[in-house]
Length: 274
Image 1 (cartoon, rainbow, N blue to C red):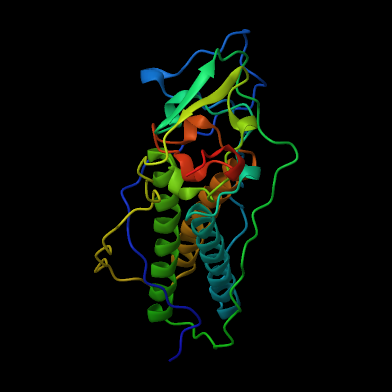
Image 2 (cartoon, helix red, strand yellow):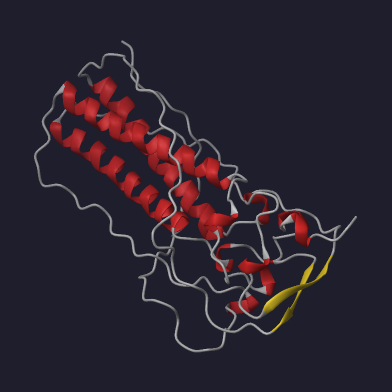
């Protein structure tokens, strides 16, 4: 028997990603730093997960294929979002007037920060999703194929949890394209001062994750099991959509680790002559 899709992924520890309601700009004329001097995150666009459908799932090859295509869409989305975070965040995805002194390493700022971090981008700035070609393999309605599909579904949600944990742990200057940071990204009232050319450049914020052990549970060929697999897949898609929304509506200083943005991240016009 041939299977339409196989995947081996690594498992992360799961961390929560807070996506607060978009309530406009914070009140008050004076900027206040976050705990430990970290940058404020600003408001985030609200995310509404897709509701569960109440329809009955039939135990058919066609439904098995539908579930698998949901998983494939999740894999494509997860891979594209990971590629975006792996050093490909451009200046367009960082909100202006959102970076405070704490995110800079070897870079001094002068002036007094005023105002608040701007709200989410509207409209969103789309991130391109690369879709892998669909397999033409034929599925068979067997317990073995249902188990394969379930493992693919679990792999997708693990990938979503990895990305969610990565954002929760905060990004670094290694995740943005070199030269992405301009003076417009600083909080209102702040200007670049002393800039050191020898500050070490942080790597990307990626995780190294062990492969999860496979469960020894037996999967029964039932419509209920098919529905369970589908709900795992839908949960993964919801999590990936929440991450995509966060990125497409703008990162702020609160999304970056302290002292993780260095001279190579600055626009070339801002770097001191070597």
